[in-house]
Image (cartoon, rainbow, N blue to C red):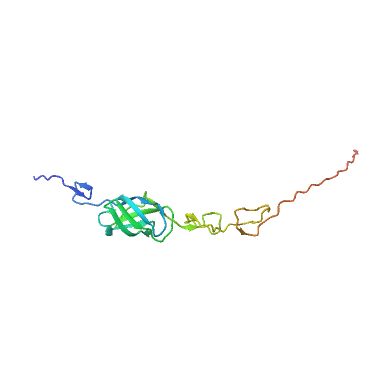
Length: 180
């Protein structure tokens, strides 16, 4: 009987022993810096298992492809341009040769967007990260009204006069009632 020694494969710092098959580990995005940026900004993506050929790599910020990928360090560091999109706390996921990383636990990214950030405004923008100063807050804008809202900037016709305090004096006559 012939005995063979175990074969250990090392491919780009990943080791596989005891098998003739080799599977590259899925890419993992550990951080995107800055973690919030406007479309057109360049961000740095760090992680693991990005490979050595930048054309084999894709990075998504949420559902949006990061543009103009460049590799700064094999396997670990990329840069890319933020696409025109919006969203907050979206997972950043890398794909290498069709092998996608998991969005679970992935670094999060937020697109910078100017808009109304007041939740009480009629034009509140859930994706806005910077206040535009153009929020439309309806309410009573008449100072001195019972329901005056100092934050309101759009009159909604609901102003109420303050309650009127009326002082009255009532004279009650006394009468004796006799039983019977």
